[in-house]
Image (cartoon, rainbow, N blue to C red; front, top):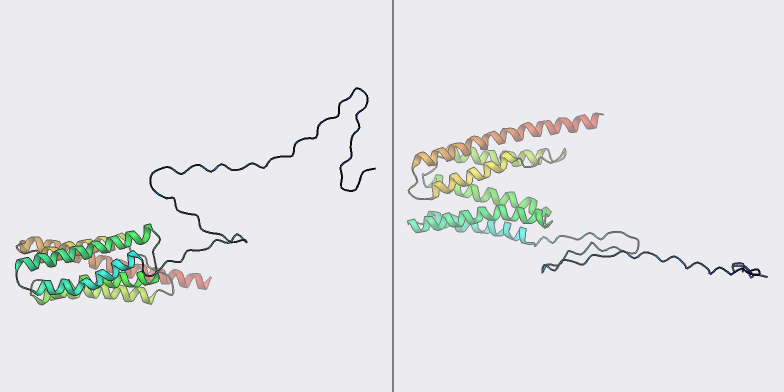
Length: 240
């Protein structure tokens, strides 16, 4: 008699062989490919708890991207002082500081996107540092009589207007930076650099600043159109 839970035993008859019991199935073990020996350590996957929930890595405010942003903001007074000191050497030093600060503007954004270092602090501090650098350069050069005041006022009014517009429509959505806005920034940097360098012909300076001014005003108008469309879409969505 077979106990409960035990399988029945087959008794072989005469001339028959008792079949051997089948081997239990073996679970397949996944093979993990070896990491290439390139001197780099592959990033570890996000940790998971017992329930299988993925732990999200918190990004520190004091990361390399935000440090570069703060450094760009702190270097603005140094640039301004160099610009007001007489002498060609000081002018070249001001140019070097200005270009270095402009380079960090591109570098911190690239680092933040590539290594997932985007923070709320960086979203606020980065545009403030950009506008502080450009605004300080324009105001200083206008005070020195090298750039007309109306050019400086038009550019500063555009930048302040776009910033205010973004805050006004933020409850409807975010207006992302456009490609034209990036081109505008590059043109402004080039035009300002030409005014800082001593000995550049006025015609070249005016051509560069005129192009930067046209793109600045044009992209500002584009932001207004996009803000109006965003508000209309948001209203239509609430009405439906």
